[in-house]
Amino acid sequence: MTMRELTTRRAAALVALALLAACQPTPEAPPYAAQVTLQDAMNHIIDPEADVIWHATGTIATKEGVIENYPRTDEDWEAQRRAALRLLEASNMLLIPDRKVTDTPFASAGPGVYSSAEVQRQIDSNRATFNALALNLRDASQQLLKASDRRDVESLMKLGDHLDHACEGCHKTFWYPAEKFPPLPARPPSP
Ligand code: HEC
Image 1 (tube, rainbow, N blue to C red):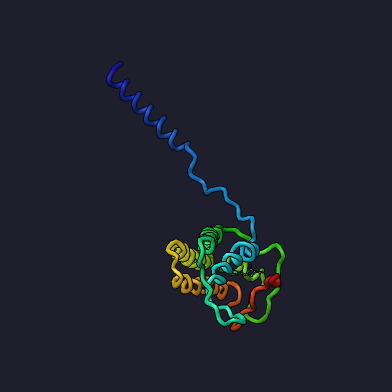
Image 2 (cartoon, rainbow, N blue to C red):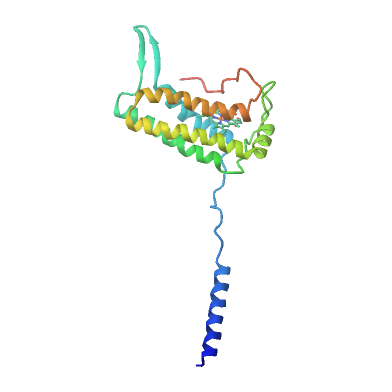
């Protein structure tokens, strides 16, 4: 084989390699699908876990007097940890694009409160803000997870407020922007 033939062969090999590289599939978005509506995520995934956190601390009035309520047993702390973990992952759910607000459209609940169609429009046109507010939930959940690992009652109480602000921050932007006294979310009566 002459020098010239060798160079030609090398060039051909390089071209073949380049073609091969060009034919490699480009990385695609992971095939997740947001099939749970935002409303279901709120009512059945996020809200119940936030309640676990909020109900864990505070004072309870009883006939015998006021009792300080806080996690005491291993199971109590495990429940806090579980709730924090679930909220943490739920904050990622909120970041998945193209989630429908609801399957059962609802009207505005009053002045300054969006209908489901308006909520959807707001989210679709202000996605970056929505994501930033979801990250507040992630931040609060991360801190709650650490506090439950440290079994730190004082932080747990403070972080309960932090969590509340993370919820309200998004609700005030995307749900009831002009309402002064937001309606309490509908809950089934306690057993
Ligand atoms: C990034 C935005 C965002 C965050 C964070 C967020 N929410 Fe929501 N949430 C919404 C929007 C938008 C609605 C109104 C549309 C709807 O009802 O689904 C809503 C509605 C709700 C509802 C009413 C659902 C219904 O029946 O219509 C509840 C309950 C709720 N959120 C609880 C919470 C709690 C508790 C937290 C915090 C732990 C939280 N949310 C954090 C965006 C958010």
